[in-house]
Amino acid sequence: MRLIIAIIICMIVNVISVEIPPADYFDENIENESCPEVERAEDEKDLVLIDGDILVSKEQAAIYYESGWDGLVNSEAWSPTKARWSKRIPYQVGAGISAPVTVGDGRIKANVENSIAELNGRTCLSFEAKTCKDTAFIKFVKGDACYTIELGKPNHGARTISLAYSCGGTAKRARTPAHEVMHTLGRAHEQTRSDRDDYVTIDARNTCSTQMAKNNNFRLYGIGYDFLSVMHYSQWQCAFYYAYQGQQLLVPSMIFKYKGKADDVGQRLILSDKDIQHIKAVHCPSMMMRLVGGRDNSEGRLEVNNEEVWGTVCSDGFDRNDANVVCKYLGRPDVEE
Image (cartoon, rainbow, N blue to C red; front, side):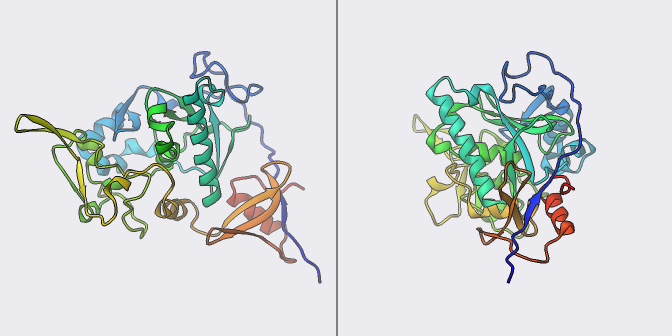
């Protein structure tokens, strides 16, 4: 009896030309110093902050403030951000994080690495270090706050995620990088779901009403409401002060209809099972696959995932056509001749 293990080599044959950007782009140094640096995505310029941690164009922001998420996602102004990442997502860590100067910088770097490791280990997505051939990618940079610049995959350039120590470097904020990555994948905040009124009561006096506005366009994918999602706000985000008997009392922005501990809502420690289900529903609707044991990320032994357990594919009927299907699924070129 023969035991045939599927071994695949995907070969990149295309050559991409890129322009060298201005010298003042983000960091003076980047990880891939031998590569010409790819310019910042065109749609990341002249932006406005909405929903607390998402920067969009002025045109999109005007629609958002006039019509909310429903009006924005159904407008022509939203169409440039609808591009979906393939299962292979290149990323780069800016020098301010990748070469930490302070302990805080090092902790931000660890949170980025651990977030990427969890996303890679529990979903079909493959976040991989950017190469010279990648002209659209995610870039983590050190900033003074945590936010995502635009949503979706840019046609060309970096989709930027800003991280600061206070919101993305502490142990309690270990999955803030994953939270922001999920925004780039198109995920909105959990408390804005169309069915949220069955689970939370929003106090209209909260300090950031736009971030608490219900999104009737929120697609649920058959996944139940998730109090433990990394995309859910805590009750103290957007809280407000109320004068009572001469004292200023801090009042939560929302009340949870939740049987567990209220302080667990808004956690940023680990991706919840439903966070993973959402990624799989959008990006992994069929069997999850990966290549392991190769010389680089374009070759290796084929493994598939069943109920979060990885196993090697063994079949004597596996041929070049099957291999090409796998390469396409993984966002890579066809197998080499």
